[in-house]
Length: 137
Image (cartoon, rainbow, N blue to C red; front, side, top):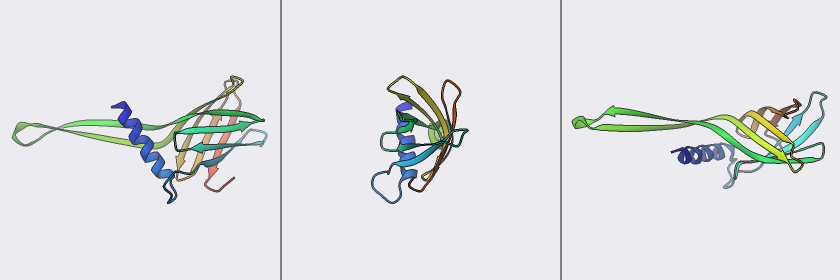
C-alpha cells in the first residue's frame, strides 16, 4: 500500500503543478540567506527531483510530498464488511539534496500551484529561505 500512496501522492502533486500542459513544468525558486544573498534552484515535478546552486556548487536530490492513508470498516448489507480506503496528500514537502563534495541540504516547504515557501538548512546550521512566486526567475 505504501507504493500506491506514493504513486497517488506524486500524481496529485504533479497535477497541482500543471499549468494546462501535458507535462508538469519545472518550477524555479530562490534561496535567500541571512545576508540577503540569492541562490537559484529548480523543482522538477516529473520524477520528484530538486536542484539548487549555492555559491557555485550544484546540489541535487529528491523531494517527498506528505500523505496519509486511512482505512475504515463499515457494516454492509447482509452482515458483510465493506472496507473504505481514503488517501490524501497535503502540500507539505520535504527535500534532501547533496553536492558532489558531500555537502547536504535539507528542506521543508509548502507548495501549491507553482508557489512555494519554506526553508532549507545545512548540517552546519546555515539557513536559507525558500521562495517560488510562480513567475520565472
